[in-house]
Structure formats: C-alpha cells, structure tokens
Image 1 (cartoon, one colour):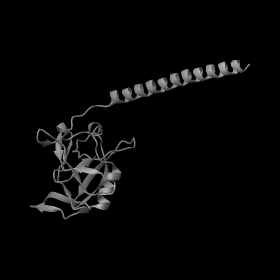
Image 2: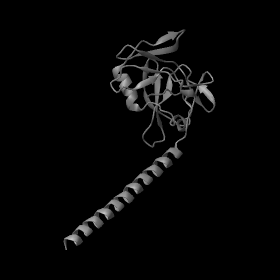
Image 3: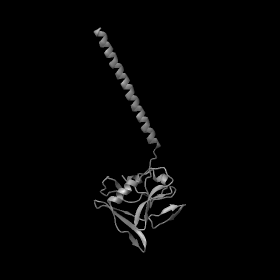
Image 4: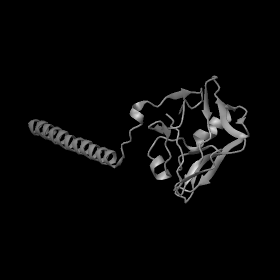
Length: 186
C-alpha cells in the first residue's frame, strides 16, 4: 500500500509539472502575440534621426521639453492633429506643470510684433516659444501668435492646443484639421 501511495504522489507531481509547463508556455505565447500585434499597429516615425535636443527645466515630474519645434528640412513641421498625435507631444497636464513651475518672462516685441516668450525652469534652464501661426485651408494665418498641439485624451471634435493671446499663453480647443507645429517631451 505504501508503494501505491508513493507511485500516486510521483504521478501527481509529474502531471502537475506537465500542466504548469503547458499553462506557462501558453501564457508566454499569448503575451508575445499580443505585444507583437500592438507593435504592428504602431506607426514608426523618424524623429529627425534622433537629433531632437531636449532641455531639463528642473520640473518636478522630470519631464524634458524639446528645445525647439520639430523641423523637417530646416522648416517647422505643421501637422494636423491625427499626424501630430503619433509623436510624443505634451499632454495638457505637462503644459499645466510648465505653467505652474516655470516663469514666463516678458514677451519680446519688435515693431509691435511678438518675437518670443522665454520659459525659465526652476533650475534656470530655459526654452523659447516663438510665433508660429497655424495653417488653415492651406494658408498660414495668425503668424504673430504661438501655437502647438497638446495630446488630447478625450474623443471630442476639438483637440487641445496651446495658444498665445497677446502676452498670455494658455490651452484652448482647436479643429483637428488645422496644421500646427509640435514640440516633443520625454
């Protein structure tokens, strides 16, 4: 009888090992397939051959902001939201953190036209926001205003944009078909 109990225990241990091996192998295969499918759905984007320069402003989140707008062939890229969304653009919360933790120095005007806004981080490093305008219906407008896309998490007809109104920078909603510049965060 003792021998039968020992055989039963060995048999059970062997079957449990087989079963666990199959379960773990299946979980691994499922995870691999899911990850592969998600990767296939991503749209690879060339970020200027990784030449984007980031500035550490000393923000509490550790977010780094690109030193300038993204450019292509030396000119600022203007993208509709559907394309801009594929890049690592800042969220509304990241913009709000920038507003809260940084000092935005006087707006510089030349002949009554906005030339830039200096954003100084808690650590003294800075970035500049220059007027970019926006492209609507294939024509550039509001050339003396600052615009850029922000990531919009909600499915609404208007998407988040950062815009200047004279000396103030803030968030508003914008038509996703407009072409605006982008800045990246990391």
